[in-house]
Image (cartoon, rainbow, N blue to C red; front, side, top):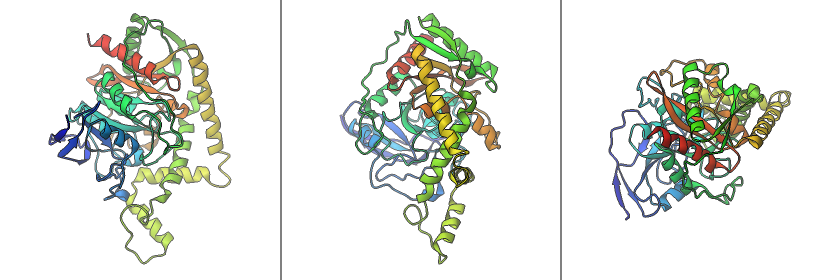
Length: 433
């Protein structure tokens, strides 16, 4: 029955940027369920800043398609969650409004860029949240915070109303404490939307099943290669043994394209960022520019002042990669590498039903521990391939290392989100007995 929800729980992790202390909800599949929404997803009447000062005070006049669907299903949209500025980061330390901390250990990062959404769920503030995943931004914080996060197949959830950072890679998806709750949210937000030209007419109506007997699970050797913490790898191997015990078949395999997936990802996403963020000029979006300087000088001054360091770094990298004389050397080669990743997934998934390995190579590190951008980028090595290929992937908690959560990642074929959900659900049900 429709009603009003009061939301005044203390936020000790800086998970929220904007909150509604009193919010109405309706009837439906999510009737009365409080849901938090990442701050790069448009919400009518609620500020949407992308964690950036350049959009400070911006209140969209419309809802993103997924928000419209949540409201129609009766959910209470309780607020907007913190994030790395424009989704650029692996820690949620790059927000203009301060970092979010990890409920599992407040001295550590929650992962990024959907760290606010993950912390809100892991801290018990809300049972479910929406994030967006460009190179692992749902799965990484899910793994670091010990919850479940699903990156759907590209196109299965409309991106209408998602403020674009790298539109060929990013995808809205659900985070929750359990696979069942993630599946429940997915059933509401998936489906065709004519306003998104990449939207697919593939609705999701699925009840998770723990019956995975006969499922073939490919395990690429590269997922346990250089840089992967030995203890994290051990937790994931333990999880694979549980799946084998349930009747799945473990199939060792290799994925050679992993060697250049990370480079292909960063050239692609920075190139798209340099184009997508060009519109933030103080005229069309964000605070007005109070200056008598010529337009190009005012444009440079505003963006230099209001974009954070990581955003400026990626815009410059992308502009360089697309510039005359370098396009063929960087961007064109990145697209060749991206196709190789897609081909590798297609080859492997002809022989196996899903691919599995660690979500992140390590557990959550301490706030401020990684100040070198390159070392931060390297931590995305296990998550970016799924975005380059557009395939679905889920992260499920699979134990702890020194008290910190580790994640099991399961990747499937295009539009077989249901299968990755089932494998995650089977594991979750078995270890909770």
